[in-house]
Image (cartoon, rainbow, N blue to C red; front, side, top):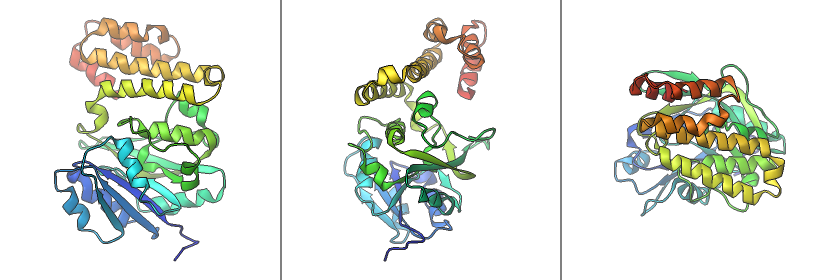
Length: 308
């Protein structure tokens, strides 16, 4: 029976050998103060104990198993096809929700043009380091497409989307992407829809050495280039209308390439990569200066790059 006070939320959990933190993540959904939800659990051909852990919960968790490993973008699409909710939320199997997440975010969809609602979030690691994402100022809201092109600031575990916003697109997650599938989708939604924000910490994003982004830096660079070419060919007049934002995207890609070169100890080429942006801001001057100092030990540079 439909609950008008609490519309159904489909919580997508994509898993690939995620047993280490999985139970804790699922528990954080069951602890919600908002009752009307389902978990769509897509197991992307895991070979560990993820299936057993997922199977230990009741029927509010709906388990699906993919026989062959596929990209994260494709796996998220498979999960979406199983959703019954009016809204879709995302929780990866190493992240956490705080109990009031759904209760506080869902009411913002009362505004018809809101397609995505996010919240504040804590990034945390195993050595107890924590960082609040929006500590000093709130993120832009409303029509934020240009702002997101300049500086993508959406954290995946905070996101809830309106199903209509998803259905308004010609495709969902791009199956070519395994690292930036969220950036691609949410930018396309925000081109047509508005973004809402709850100024409370409602999610926790786990940082660890096994995360995809720390192991696949080169893949990350390639996907960002593919994304830029894709969006340039999708939006009419994109190159003319968003020249400033394209420059920001190219600058960020150059920084990813510079980091890759620095990890390989090729500091000369790394500095050349971002030289043209060195005086764009104090932040970029600091980045350029760090890569330009030849006498600092490699491990120290590496640590600084990680912190930046």
